[in-house]
Length: 282
Image (cartoon, rainbow, N blue to C red; front, top):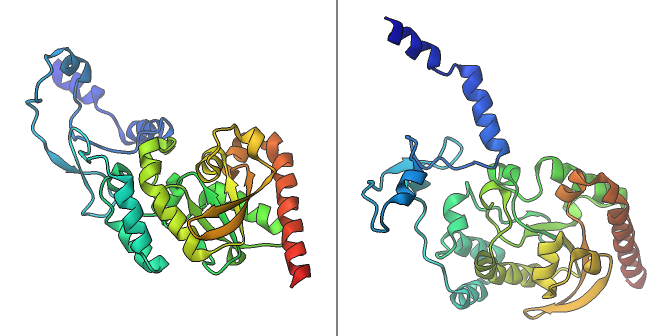
């Protein structure tokens, strides 16, 4: 009788479970890999050999499509060949074909772990393209780039210089959300960058604004801190397309560091002047 009461008292109630899940979410845990806990410390003490644990396949969550599944011991995806990714990307003759090629891209584990592909948002005929690091959690759930609070801030920033999403085109260095919102790994960027460059070539924007350090470094091919890159114009060629790149700060960073909004506003005014100069020449 006493043991029965002890078992009942030890059971988590709904508010406790909800609080625990919220804590996991805040810590960056976003993938359920097993229905039962596994003592990884005990496993690490065993001699290195194939694990006796069954490779049980389980659903990853209600928010994911039913065909998205993950192995109990992790997603086994071989690292892809960037040269092959380049050939695949260049074979796409339109944004529709490019998106379809990404949907079936092999060799990038981000595709398997993410809820969905976040390809773009905005106007594909725009002369201004904004490029960030990677989709956020909100982007991953909704399916388009720069949503959630960061997207709201970006909309306000654009509105301050007379622009809206109908006048710009939005994308990211990688089109899938990395688990826990971590930075994409170098090999993940290498696999996805050919597709972004082809995307830029097809859209052919006159101006590109990179948002955040990783986006600036990836497109400018300069291993410098963002403090050295932001605020300056760089003429560059991406595949066959000539364009100008302005490096600036990411809205998500500005939410964490509001004092840096003055720098972002300076960059926005430079963008506004460039737009007016172009209109004056037309």
